[in-house]
Image 1: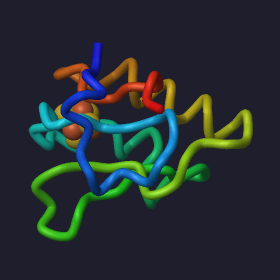
Image 2: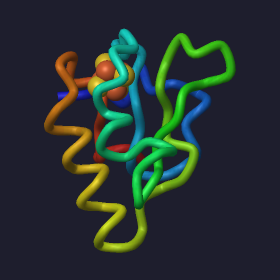
Image 3: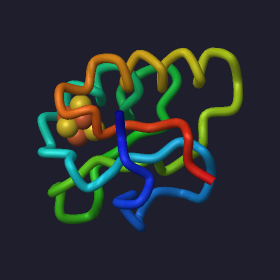
Length: 82
Ligand code: SF4
């Protein structure tokens, strides 16, 4: 389970976030990254972490974000943010 108390500040405001335990292994980008049909995740500027640049809104975006959450090996993706 991701921890919203260590949410990366670069995430766009909203309930979905990546926390500081992102390695970044990049596997989530295969589900919801810039090259996918419903992108909501991308690297930060120095590619040291992944972040939500857009909150998932459509059912397809939410499905993509949920797949990313489930595949993340460090459980760095959460949907319980404020
Ligand atoms: S899958 Fe998890 S650890 Fe890997 S890049 Fe994405 S958020 Fe970071």
